[in-house]
Length: 240
Image (tube, rainbow, N blue to C red):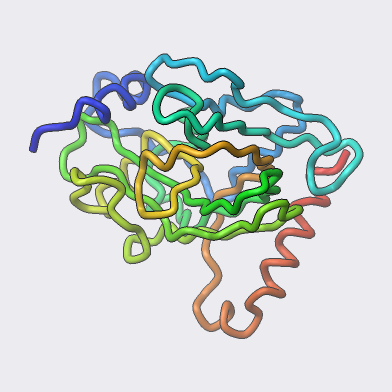
């Protein structure tokens, strides 16, 4: 199957990760957490094809869910019809976020989000393979609606094979993608789409974490209380 021009451009940097081998080496581990407490974006970037958005991702002090001393990653989208920065999206291709999610036991992505905009957002997590890996493609999670001016909320996104949705027409097999992740992204997209929607919006993100998903029975018993407990412990760990 031929690859789209957009996909080839979007994965140029991802190719460099696994150059010399058709597969991405195991790197991701359950428990991987980016909390931005080093004052940097920790290599989360808005574009992979060289475009520089008008307002790049930035780390903001004292903006995180733990308050004073807690850093957060701020993403700004201009709402322009096309071009860099038109969409609320951020990507990571660093070795700690790529590899074989299935072998590593990563089944869920947790993150904290604060929608600072006067419009609601539908947040999803997207996963993609290097173009040299056939049979995988771009996949996205179910969407979570975050109301306008939401305040901090903790969201959980299942990345189990059966829960992922095709992110574009070239998506083939989520199992292949989960075994060969080269790009992880967080984005706003009202419909299942890896590229997302143009929107004028600002949102803060914090404590992006790869975790094993609670068992179905445990989720049914604890539900929101479990997520609240997880969020509390993660935020406490992020505080100085």
